Image (cartoon, rainbow, N blue to C red):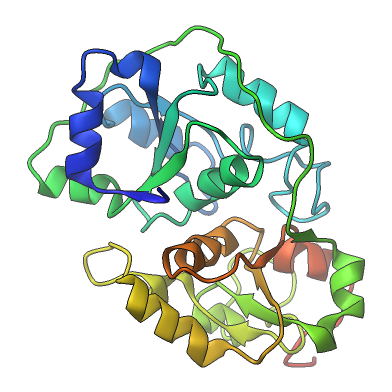
Length: 279
């Protein structure tokens, strides 16, 4: 399971033993607004949900992908943080946000990549779908006891900056950022507008419909088939977060998992590598 519907989630958290079998995680986060995600959680969240911060819980400035903006922490550090939040090996973990799953997909990718046994899913449609179904939000902040979580000890299907630079002719880099950022028409945070040489524009927004829910698997297969070149896919974005949305979409489509460039465009540009269009 990589996606879960509102009805499925409501049924799971309504079960008598829910606290022992499922952990709902609010990962709302907004570019250039570091405290806004926590504020949104405190104002109202899905009942039983805990909050995980992209910057402190799902990233490490010294980790894999540095000097990019959201490098991956070591698997050991990530496991310890998840244990502190009360996530145990047997629990289904459901992440949600209010940006079409673009941040929740990062939590999904991390736990899935390290082999979380209890399963991990993204709430399809996010908190907006929850509210549209007439379901309530809560303001209490649950605190769960420290848990025991078994995860793998290394990241898989990842590529470092120098390795990617050497292999650009042998892979297809999918850029999950908005088209205007890919084209270099605007750049709200990174140093240089543009994209990695040879990268293909594949905005994460193309994975969902107008309601914010993921497209049907057949539609997703068609989308990525149109982007295929016969070379392995490497998924990238600004900082390695939204890139995971394309990985989730490919899983939904029944396609092979792409390689994640964890550092993404922020790592690439901060390291002085060339970009397109050339300036």
